[in-house]
Image (cartoon, rainbow, N blue to C red):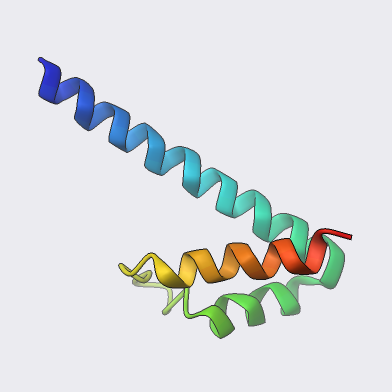
Length: 73
């Protein structure tokens, strides 16, 4: 039962982080436009096409950092 709780907790964490990433992209796109938002995804290597996303977490951290630097003012 404890393993099930850990697994559920991990899944909820992934959903929460994914939701935050969507909100970051919405913020960035609202300030700089949809095309710039798409360019950010390509620049950071986070999005690899409609059939797959990166498995490496580095590009996701890069995207978050870029949004933070661009939108903090």
